[in-house]
Image 1: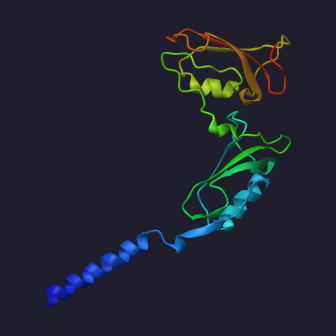
Image 2: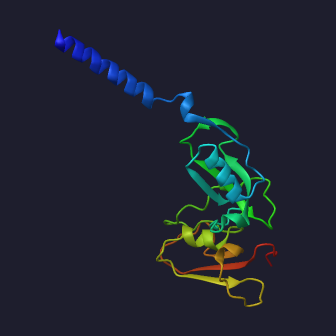
Length: 188
């Protein structure tokens, strides 16, 4: 008899454990609409609602890091507002306060894949995104395409206008050259 009651107790404990580990309404919360808020405020409000897994990305696809959250504003959020499990990662697409939100979050665009044997297409992408897609052993030269001879210091502020080798060319260790202008300037 003791064995049977011990088994029954063990089964009941296992059932309670499975129920506690399963998803129920106590593990969910209402995620507010945080689009249009400052990034720091959005993060604070998401945390106050019970969400702890927070991420952010450059909605313009330039690869910039949101180091000072108070200098960025939210353009998009995933998941959308509504009830969600509190262990869900909330990702904010953000731009600097002085920038306009893009019509479409650039995170949906696939960044150039890591270069293997073929040169990716970098035109319109930031120099930072291009550098990150190239193997770390690649010799890379970046030139100001405006003809002004400016130095490219903050690579996420510069967009690629031209590249050599061309997109799709075999890439097997040769040096890569990118011609770029600052975002907001037209390519020559």
